Length: 637
Image (cartoon, rainbow, N blue to C red; front, side, top):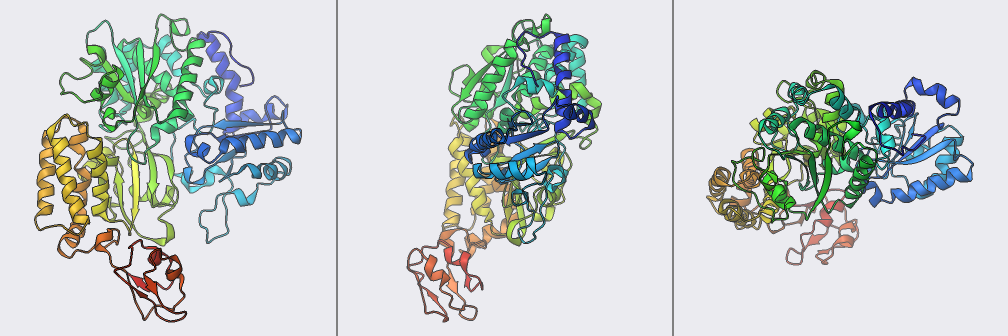
């Protein structure tokens, strides 16, 4: 936006403000309506968006932005080119990311010292800086210049992530230009609460926090529950290892969540909302606080929103990082200032939530889908995805995959498409072995099911869940027994301790798994794990305990042979469990290059140049360094 907003908005001024930014957004999307204004000098010739999310900031993207601003100024380009911060583009493995609009040039791993060349070659010379472009395969010199031509983005459909990378997340003017608060205005001006709920039900949106409960039905229950005081809460307590979907949205488009919470408040009859966000997200917290303040100053939150009779206030509550507070009753206890521990249900939060009042709880991604549904209609959203799993899903793609980051794909997209099309495949030519979906509460999907559609029903049939969106890819070198041990160690550590099945049962399971990976497994251990898992799932108080055994059960189901190898043969097929690995030199393959001798930290390898080497197993630290550097693959395990 070219001018700042300084007064409270009503319906008419909000529409005018948005129309003032239409040309700007059209230009960033490369659409024709902005071309005439750009040519007339009303808009800058070029927008340079520098990613400002936590991942890029950790790699000094703020210094890169400062360097670009200085370089533009040095060449007198201040009015011709605008350098701005943006939210996460999603392609986190290429951080820090810089994208230019309207040409859509995508630059990877940009450092402050690259600013001068971007200005002289690209901005002034009209030619992209080739060395900073994305290179899909390091063995091939071909590079991709434009963002939307990259395989990572081609397979995506961004709804929840629609504004990430297009707007400055700290500017409410930018958000309004991208249609923020237009859905809220439409709701307040044209729709009854019942009509809002009907649209949400028509969309088929299900909760993206893990349980997958129908959102419209949840809103309807909350509305129909009698009560003079009701609350709306947002679960932003993202605790799954490797997951950052909610953080990306909060850092890149905080107004989308605030707007949706206000719409939810109008629909159920609430005037007060709380966002429960973990304190480990300082960037998200800062931007949320700024967004709440901006929206309140402009009359988009607070009393008599947009001049209507509806009022809605939002407060932040910071969590201390307890994983169990992702469970809604534990979250509400923490918001109230109590220890975050789940309680039995019923009563459900819709009947007795915060301070005993009816409360609606959804997570960040669920709310981010609400404004587009109101603007485009429930039928539009329901046309995306599968029959029972509508819309799109955001995943945090991580692990042994070439392209890591935030991806948003239609429900029903296969695991193969995500791994090989969006994710770019497995590095170093290795084979796909499994994918952990749904975080610590999910399960492992093996290679034989790589063509499974990713939706609620298909994953449940395989013993896993969609969850909140964690998606960890594992290659052929992963030990599935150790993977199960890792996730169970996490959930056992995060157990609140309130109910014995979770507190004690997961500890007993972890003890068995620790014995197995240490080479002390016994016959009957697999059956003991299955029996304990069955009891824990049936009797735990909350979802954390009920789903804690899932990684163990799914790995036993699909990789039982690995458990048996650990127990019966005291051997780890993947070579990951140190106590079960012994490194040796194949004398016929060894060329005596001495690389292994040079990297061995314990001096366990001896041998002369161009002669076969040997490993002293008593001195060997089993670190695997020699195995990793051996070019002829003479070192075996």
